[in-house]
Length: 121
Image 1 (spheres, one colour):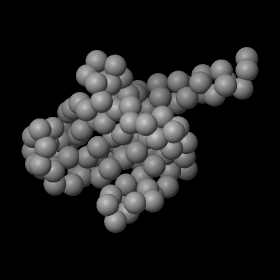
Image 2: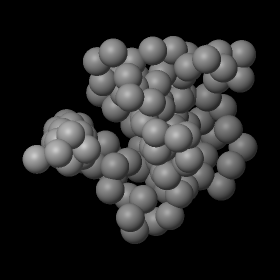
Image 3: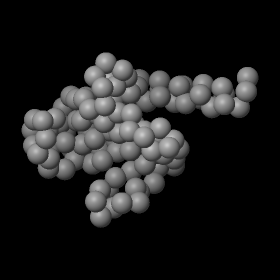
Image 4: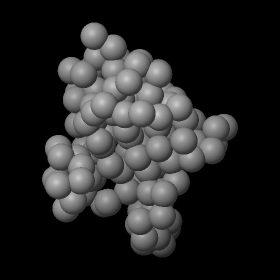
């Protein structure tokens, strides 16, 4: 197995393990295949969003560089997953008025998916 194939295999295993943690995370990972870039991953509380977000970005996550624009945002160690904590939003996807985002991008920073978790009380 080549190094690139091994990396792809490990990434696939990592994503599968994240998906197993909660059905909403599975939607964040696999929903883009069905729904395009922007899609809903359901609803949850702010504390659930925080737990899911930490699972989403995984060990070794760091604060995003743009904290003025995105306070509390975390980026996975490999840079392919971003968690944006709950914030008030005026968007078609923010049906409750507040949402957290679970973003997927390629290693070059190109957006692949933006899953929206609507926050309920």
